[in-house]
Image 1 (cartoon, rainbow, N blue to C red):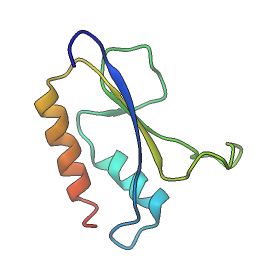
Image 2 (image 1 turned 45 degrees about the vertical axis):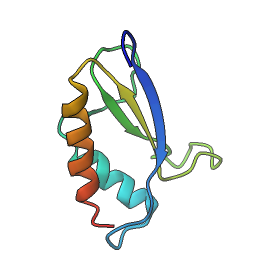
Image 3 (image 1 turned 180 degrees about the vertical axis):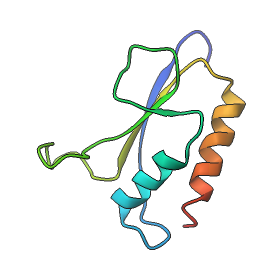
Amino acid sequence: MKGFGSIVCIQVAPAGGLDGAGAADKLVQALELWLPATSLGGVESLIERRRRHAAEPTSVPENLVRLSVGIENVEDLWADLEQALDTLGG
């Protein structure tokens, strides 16, 4: 893509003895370039695991992760995401 960012949502599969929500949390924690945040207003790449709180709708999967792609180098973002996925050992 050129000229704009994008938002991508994924559901993280259970891995490494963790359920989907636990694997999603581990993925978020393993990232270095993607910042954990809920904002969509910045230019940096952000990641958020949805449905972290009991009050959130049950229609939102516990393992749903939202990635907001910012202005960082795309190859750096891919490498960061790949190394975080590797930590799941699934």
